[in-house]
View 1 (cartoon, rainbow, N blue to C red):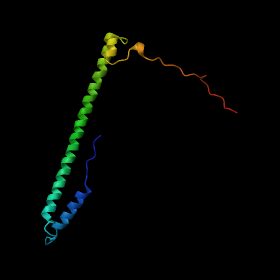
View 2: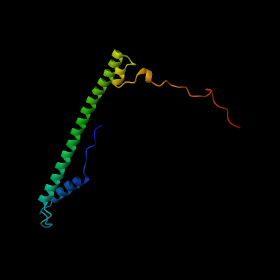
View 3: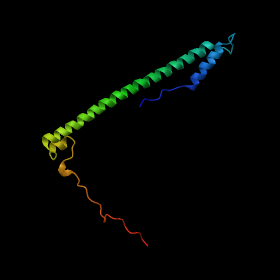
View 4: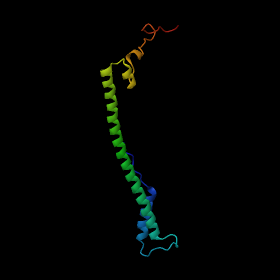
Length: 124
C-alpha cells in the first residue's frame, strides 16, 4: 500500500501570503529581517524539501514492492525445496527434518475432547 504523500498547510499559507505581498503596488517595508526575497527563498526551500521527501516516499514504495515480490518468489522456492526433500527422502526421514520439515512420526495425533457429544441438560 502506497504511503500518503505529505502536504503542508504552512507551505500553502506562505504561498498565498507571498502572492498577496507581491500584488502590492509598492513593496512593504517590514524591516531588514522581513524581506519579500528572503520570504520567497524560504518558501522555495521548504517546497523543495517537501518535494524531495515525497519523491523518496515514492521510491521507498517502489523498493517495498520489489522486496515483496522477491520475498514471495523466495517463499515459493522454500516450499518447493521442502516438498522435493519430502518426495526424495520421505516424510519420516532425518533429511526432511534437516530441511525444516516435521517428521511424520513426530507429529502430534489429534485427540478428541471428552464429552457425550450432546447438549447438557439445564440445572434446576
